[in-house]
Amino acid sequence: MTEPVLIDGHVHIYPDFDLSTFLDAASRNFPGRRGCLLLTETARDHAFAALRDAQGLPAGWQVQTFADDPAALCLRGKDAVLWVIAGYQLVSAEGIEVLTVCTTDRWPDGLTLDEIMARLAEAGRPAILPWGVGKWIGRRGQILADLLDRGVPPGVHLGDNAGRPGFWHEPPLFARARAAGLAVLPGSDPLPVPGGDRDPGRFGFTLSGAISDSAPAQDIAARLVGLTAQPAMFGTRTGSLSFLRQQIQLRMK
Image 1 (tube, rainbow, N blue to C red):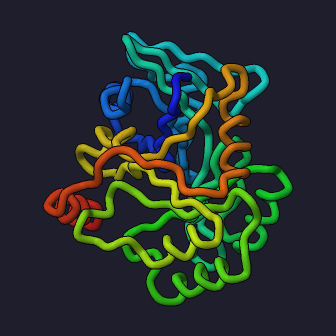
Image 2: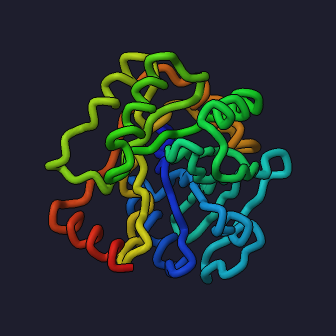
């Protein structure tokens, strides 16, 4: 990988996405047509396994696996290189969304936040607690505030996404997290609505320094676990009208 490494920290590949559109959009959206996609699959999704087995891979794309790193793939297209890193989206017993990234381990929904963080710490894997519309309101917001006050294991960070429009001020928990030595790791968070398959790679963060060519997921995991400062961000957020249209489409669906 060239420097800096561009990472979209919150990516879904939904079954109704057109994979050719998705990959072409990701390669266009990443500056230089190179970047990493951190997948955050739900229990119903198996996109990483399908890509690994080249199921439905569009013409012109090739997939490379890594013998020493089963959580990583490299997809190569015309003038484009995309690293795809396995990861999953959980909902804790408290109703908090947790993204377990750089891992092929799947855990069930309904574990407590403390259980999830303990398992992550034992495995040396990072996690992202992502912001979303309505997800940090009331009781859940207070749970996260209390969590930041008492401290989290290394590698647990908060997340932002491209769906937070410009008029929506930054959540106060972001400043508290940064003050506590955590980062805010953004991603595109494509929605299962028309046009969502054009969003990957449009918003994310950077890591400096070359990433391992033989074990990219393990390398990224170690960097995120050791991250204690806010990395630079890249990309653009959705506009106000697009935000409103997507939210209406999502709720109608």
